[in-house]
Image 1 (cartoon, helix red, strand yellow):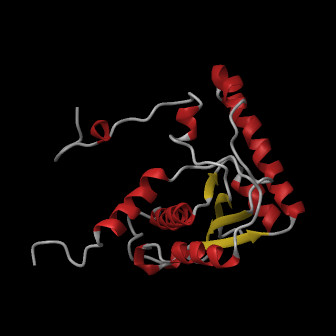
Image 2: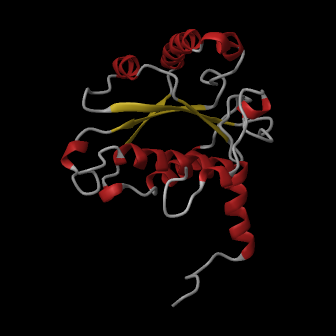
Image 3: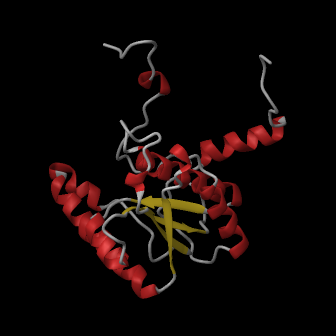
Length: 216
């Protein structure tokens, strides 16, 4: 067979591309709740992600205690201040950016790399970071599922992993990689928030592609 195998119908295919193109890293939330059935579907989407050697390295912590949420936010805020200082001339501009919605979103889910990853050689012998790539695929699946369901999601990576691990009793052999904020939003950004705020600009795909060899 030389053509597509079992392609989606045009409407379904368009919906997939719409989710991809309109997904945004969300920082502004409208409170409210995520119904349990929706949350189950979003988490199921994460668990259906590809993983190298089918190692499924993702671990999820649902944060339901408001006090723990606030402690997580304190860890993020401490790193936000350190990041602002490290940015030098752009530190003040960075300080005006909203970098998380931990206390405003409906759900907070911490994603970590699990223990026992070193036992997996298949796919990791020369590229051990493929466990992290697999977790990133799981998070991307959550993002797309959340967008399809009409909810925003934001990936907060601004934290010291050791501080967050200590706070949440994550064992030394595991590693937190994301604090995910999920919930209702008033709107989805038309463009990525960092573009809308003037922090940076998007690069076209043509700038990032080459053929056969790395470009000069």
